[in-house]
Length: 344
Image (cartoon, rainbow, N blue to C red):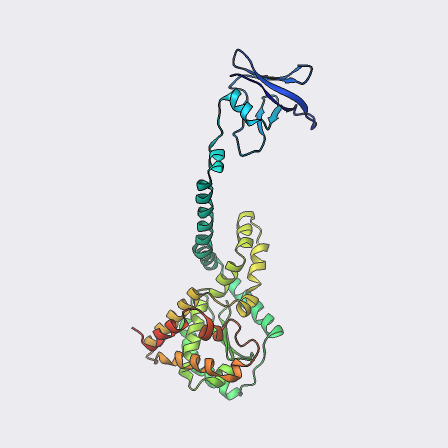
């Protein structure tokens, strides 16, 4: 080793540094002396001190066994003493192509995480939650929506009873494995249907009046049951608040998870479902219609009628995520409805 390095020395006991110089000795040790009087402040052999790698223009330091530290910005002098040209991180930082590759890697990993990682994690968490969580969550969601969005139904009691009778076999068929399905009627101001995590399914008066037969309503019911069976409401909420969920899982504090789950009614009415979730519900409805020998075009007929309904189109909120978003603006809608027109 040759040359010397100017810098400052921290003794590990007080925060104020002193001007110092690092010198190599003839026997291979390094010595730090105070400037200008030359008093020795630290000494260590090669196997005792710890030398930091070079990282851009940040200070390099040498740590001594007694807690002292020598710092300097004179990178060239440090290389003259220690014969190093900087570590891997410095070499990476010094080459723009590596920085670009790293940036692309970060962007790609972020996209993959958002596209696949978060949905997969949300699905796994949703299916691990106990049944009573869904029951309590559904009751809370219905109470919230009744207070802030829904109005009592004006449908004739006889009509409601007839629909419930028509729905009863289907609700019974899929009310299993802790899933209790129940249909409610409310005024929503638009033709719509909404499935809550507990299995409570809400039909608006408008969608009932817009339907021309009960088979169309059955098709909608099957679609909503698909959302319940695949835990879509909770999965969508978890995706919207995945960071809170991650903190809850790491810390063991369930409060973060609770805050995410209680946002379900807001998520359902403002964000709607993802394209993949709608496709899963479509698949469920299509299989149901085919299994029960109900013409699959019943689903398309009602959806198309909703799209053409001027009363719905002219109302504020009618294009909110939900059924109208499904038939008019949701990506891939025509292709998806085509599956019901020409099922395999």
